[in-house]
Image (tube, rainbow, N blue to C red; front, top):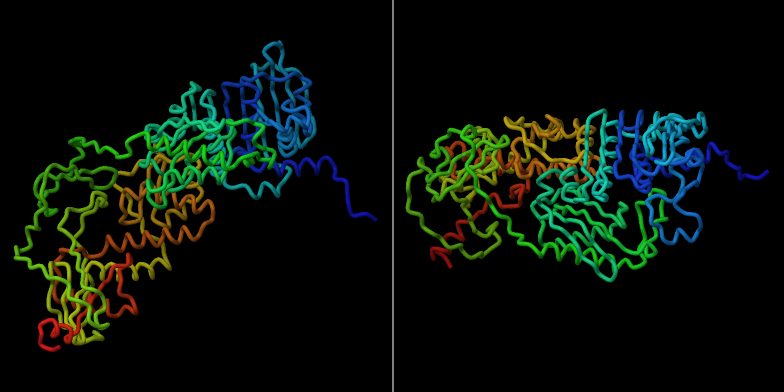
Length: 628
């Protein structure tokens, strides 16, 4: 008996659905592509329950006859191609004829359609691949398709879906690509009756960018228009100040079809070399127009992959297009100073920061910022004036010297512009009992209120108090974080954050994990705010770290999560450690030294700077000529 079986039509339909229809976002993609091919200039997408319980796509395209309305649910039924030769140059977004049959096989579908020249429209009802109803219906010109109970008869597919919020985010992400590819079409997306996107359809890419990414990103782009050997590249790329921590804001199209191409991504990012910080990715929305005969999009059912007949030529066209755009403008950002509103001024005396000459702290976004006038730094008022003598570094003469003596005392400065809105006394290390000290230690004193001088086991030791305490705090935090989460700091004034709907949906899904790393947020009046951050953290790093973590969680990249968690630990330790220019008592210095000596084989802060350098009595006596 043979082992090859002829599959039933029901099973074959479900297999096809598995290839084309993976989630609600796949359904939206296929239906919107059909609407665009039908010549629509107004397309509305409505979803509920993430798109699994209800999904409707309405357009004002050409519509269908009653005969075509029924035939369109048959496998490989399409108006886009008629012969095999048509596959050599595809001008439409859809062409396989699989989408509607696959969707109808795994859901309940109602289709309403009408051509302008017809007096009556048509209604078709399909469920599980079977035609249930066909008849006339009063409907507007164009086509409206309603999908209910997606994957109701394929529980294996259903269990792989994510939360409703995440699935809705994928739908929004797909719609954002259509908006950017077709600014001439008016799109509307609603989720649970709330509007997510609406575009005017006025052919302006600037307005499309504004609708998808917001004002700051729309203003921070450079137009691209370049042609090389019949390949034209148009669109926009972002200036360095709107770079992101991930590639979410990169969209590439070939003949207005959204694609994913590592080669094009590399061409864009190579053009930005030496213009972006490490870990930052440029914003880019580019359309590549070329002869359809020179590309193959019949590679995968999702049509996200393409093959170019000349990969190198496409790479060069994109690379030069982006590079020319970047070098066409002045890349030096302009700093615009503005007077803060009176009600935002924080009434702290400038003397509290050790500065004179007009530096006013201003409360913005839960952090303190400083509006600068002309000023000169002064020494802290509480520190006595002293005559400082410059010493040159002694030559290294033996391995007894642990590190070259290159002290770099920090300048007296006001608090950082991005310091959290909390003003505490500088922390001091806990004092240990002298009887517990494992070494022969005699504290000499402080140098520049920054370095501790001590005689340890017959050697002169110089300890950087900030680096030492930072390392101790870091080791302490590592032990604590092994058993608990990072404590979030809730901000007095939450930080507004322009994130994409996909990133918002990812936050809703992974909010518990984000909270464990000290982040929290909420939507207020359709705007997202970060309400808590790891305490303390630089404001300028908040959004990039926030987005980086969301991407890492969605891609299950544990190494990125671990790396980010370690960086956060570094930051917290650094902010919590005693600073330079902070006076310590002898007991505090003694305690700090003893704790540093208790560290096993560790003599650097978390950033790699040395904690302690030593010099033996022999080396000192050589310097003074006492011995040869």
